[in-house]
Image (cartoon, rainbow, N blue to C red; front, top):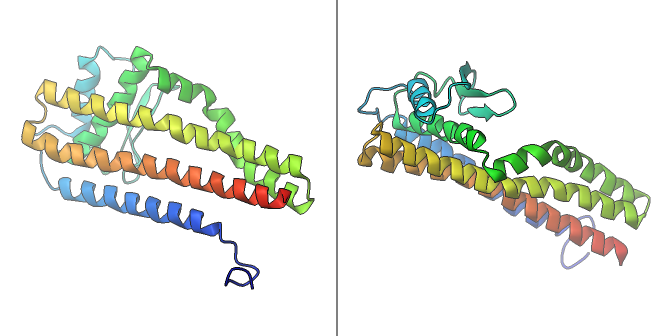
Length: 232
């Protein structure tokens, strides 16, 4: 027994569990918020795709293609292709939730058009961070298996790249939502009452990125504790 637990119990798993619970709560929260406000139809009668087109044109953006993709809340903007993808749950919907989601993705297109620095940085380092994050755990495990501390430390360094991209994503996502809400209000597509609901949907969505970053940080902390224990 070790601290009241069987020898095989690793107390650092608690950190992973905390991150997982936070992420599940955030995901449930955004789905609940979207479902609630997806029942509220915008007074303007605009569909999310129409609203997206208007927002882009109002900002002088005419080189971004709006496409419909399958899925539920799989909406995204691809800077390298100048494509704004709206999911089945969003594209033709006239709800304030769907319009808010579409406006958020337009926020990314606007960031791209004005050269928003955090987005440019995210785009530049994302490939490297993705590779590093994927290699981190295998390299660390190999280091533990062969009791080779330098390899363990390299694994942690590689995994840290994934944490870095999670942190850089936060200002990008929140800025896109702020741009979306400001544009929807200034253009009159949604009135003040409607914006209250849309803001709740986008804030709930933002928390999923906070949860992802927190989970990544907790996982990194766990790896650091394991490495320290291995060194001892």
